[in-house]
Length: 114
Image 1 (tube, rainbow, N blue to C red):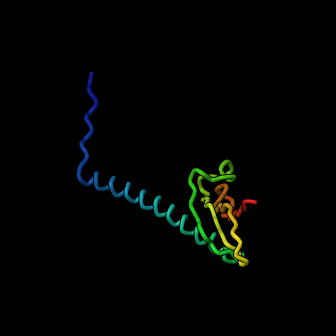
Image 2: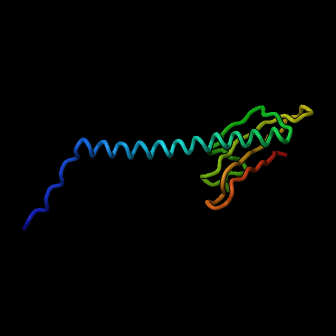
Image 3: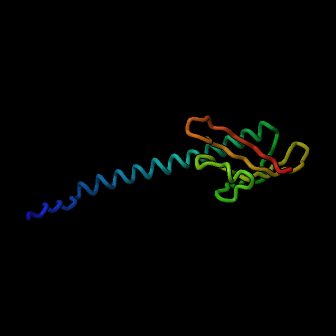
């Protein structure tokens, strides 16, 4: 019975290539997520400003997503909002930005507490 040949140990070049691949994957993943958060915040701010609201407080919500919890996908970003209208009244609500499914367009949904 013959033994299978032992694999060669990793060389410095192999380790460098593996490290480069892992770092590139990490940078692309984190960079994409960060860009998505920046686009979501600016889209929500622009939409609220266009509607005549001033943002008092805007909090990103990962788990506590209120009424949006059961219908939010991983590619959507949820914020809890407190805004002030032109008359000075405060409103609270939720904003969800992103795609519900891969081939659907990016949408912004605002849901106000009544």
